Image 1: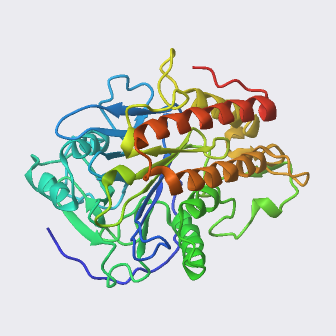
Image 2 (image 1 turned 135 degrees about the vertical axis):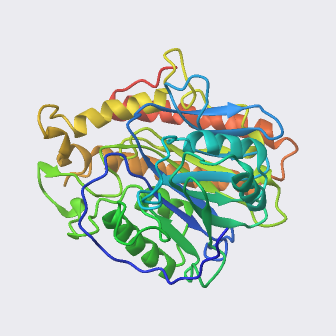
Length: 404
């Protein structure tokens, strides 16, 4: 393993657009108002149908984001286990050595599933990477946090990795690191996602200055940001019908968001919270899930009779209204007035207003949760309460049913 000390810098290059990129970040507990680390993945993929699954395995059980078509749960794309170990990734396109002719590839989901099953700490993950047979079949930026306050990225290719410790002020002077689809230790000016990286850096810098690197900021501001990192265009200030929708943090290919809020050293891993925006992030609502009760996942997030999740299904129906042109290059054009308009009744405007009530009720619930005799029971009741609110919201606002 190599060590690395460098100064994070922001730069823009013009590159072809990657079809399925991701935007991710890790925030050290040193930089958050409550002292708890955050792990964020804004996922883009060709698999629109995502579900949350619980895995009762040994030595550790875990919950994670899975493609709905993966009915056996062989890959996990972000998740957390019962020890408070959480992992996610973004694909990298400048890490693989030019002379690497390895055909094995796309094993990131399998590696993360394995890590959730066997790792309790960053050290465990490093030992796993060191011990696995090479080539690994990956080219990725893996982000990891643990219940001991550990927080780091691992820029990983087929034969090795570089650790970027988010708690090290020489590497992350502001207490956070952002990754899109390039690696800082990879080939200079190659890879993808520089425009999204620039926008995320601006958002995070502004939030840091306001001491607002929080769950709410990432869920409501970062993953739903409609400002362009290169042109500066802010779609929330536009009065247009259709707009070209390229290189924003949320994209047409965005399929879900996972945000894990870790614990302070000494706190129980049970307190770890995984926020989930299941489905298209601009038409879906955040749902909180605690490690303390992973067994009783809400039905609207789990695979139903058709192996899809009701909340994801509803979000995709609304997504069709946002991208109604199917022929030719029409898929690149967002029907902005459906999503955001001067009347304040766009889909996203309604989503964000409702989500604020979910964030507020979750915060109030947590204040009393851990003093209860049976937190698991209270969490299950809270899931039921929230599910009813979600069903009513989608029915009354969009005339959609969240059917199991």
